[in-house]
Image (cartoon, rainbow, N blue to C red; front, side):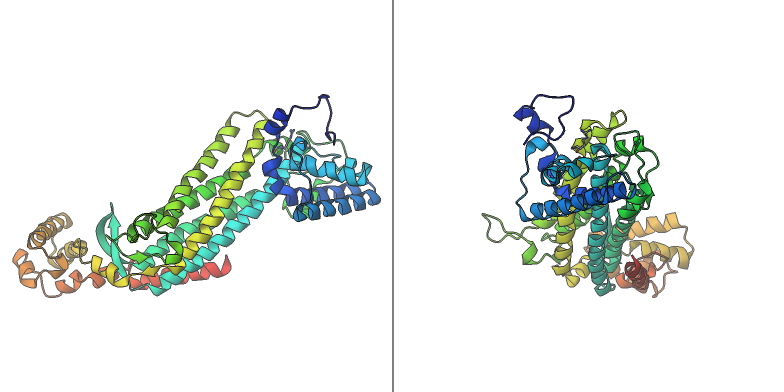
Length: 460
Ligand code: ARG
């Protein structure tokens, strides 16, 4: 069939141009959004007397049939139609004649694509929030089970102070909570209807943008048409939000990879979420967290690509903007599967409690507690207490024992004011529970944080 829009350019385009110019191969996923937008636009045209009720009915029926054809796989996609907007409009006109040709009154593909893409991004914002909530519930379940499970908290990947595993999971819960809030706030900001902006300057037709906005479920129409057809901030935001979220997923993945190594052996990923080596029969590899870490790179790439595409564009629409979609589709799909598989992997992993607690006996984790004891009990200035403790740690190293195993006599040798109560301070569990400042790791504080997240999850 001949091209629908044969305007200034009269010759048939070359096959190479069709291939280069088309977005149809990837923007066909927007068909639902396109049909939804057209239905609302047509309804508004009718209520404004721009098209007749009969024409509206024909358009509705036609669009519904097109939707079924696409879903059934019988719709013929022709790359020379360029994009999903033209493909649907052409088929509609084929089916219903002149009424189909009137649908594009007071509309341009510039506001049409801005609408379709925005609807897709809004749907994706909601999808991300839902998947993050499910992930949070699994993390919360793990946290609840492990408020007493001690492991070495680290800085510089060196043993630092004892913490509990619930507290560690709650740190990730905090990150994913911020992610949810970012998707929510982006959703709010983008909740404005672009349709009716036409090419760039509005339209002389007596349209009602408030009406289409309401029909499509937006808060209100955008205020400036020139900005609206040029704006892809909503796409940048979802790419950024996914990038930050994947950073969190990647950091957790890195920990899962370390923790499942023989050196740590803190967790074992279930066989369902591990893979084997093609040559080494004994191996169980953490491919899931490795891929999650790797996929983080590609979503960063999508963000940088779109920022770069947009940065030099004069107002309003430029064809460069057709490059906005694939990266977003890819990032959303990558994020979807990542969130799902991470949740499953966490939900099915075994936590090796004994091994984590065993690891706390390495690295003199209660050294800060001894220094604090010397400050409180013996009135030694903190810097001197720090030095004294450092010397004791060095002695323990020589003897091949952990500071928590040192005898009272040895300690009293350093300062006679030290009493038997010091041993309690050196005990690793007491050391963990001593950190009961607000937001700290003590079991009672971890439980307080669990209650906070539980309350939040019920309402989010
Ligand atoms: N396929 C185009 C895109 O994805 C739709 C908008 C085309 N507008 C235009 N004036 N050529 O950006």
